[in-house]
Length: 130
Image 1 (spheres, helix red, strand yellow):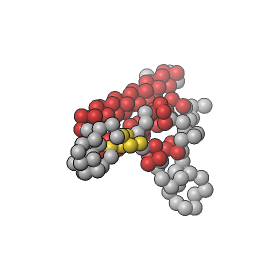
Image 2 (cartoon, rainbow, N blue to C red):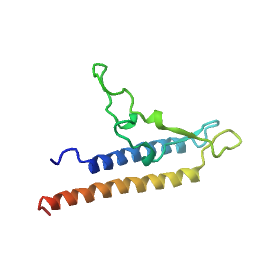
Image 3 (cartoon, rainbow, N blue to C red):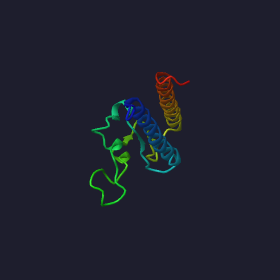
Image 4 (cartoon, rainbow, N blue to C red):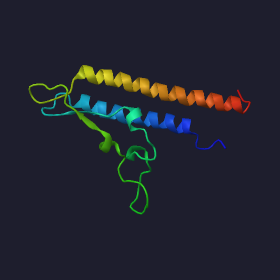
């Protein structure tokens, strides 16, 4: 009855998305001085969350003997290039933009934890436990 609750799956998927996006942002910051580097970003969680259809949230294989799933984690398929800013050397990383994105990702991660905690409290209350 209380297995595979959608609210917990959504909260977990939101936390995973936040972690993946933070990794992309960290890579952008690390390459802020690399000539010709093109900044990358990920679409919002609302645009990418579709557990049955999206590769990033499907099962993955860890061995070639597995029948279903994909070998990659799906992040490369949903990362997009951001060419909204370009310096003379061709680098498109703006540290100010990356810091704003990092703050947005932290808020998303905190939101996913709050959703999980709230749903857990509701579940406990429905069972008569505090």
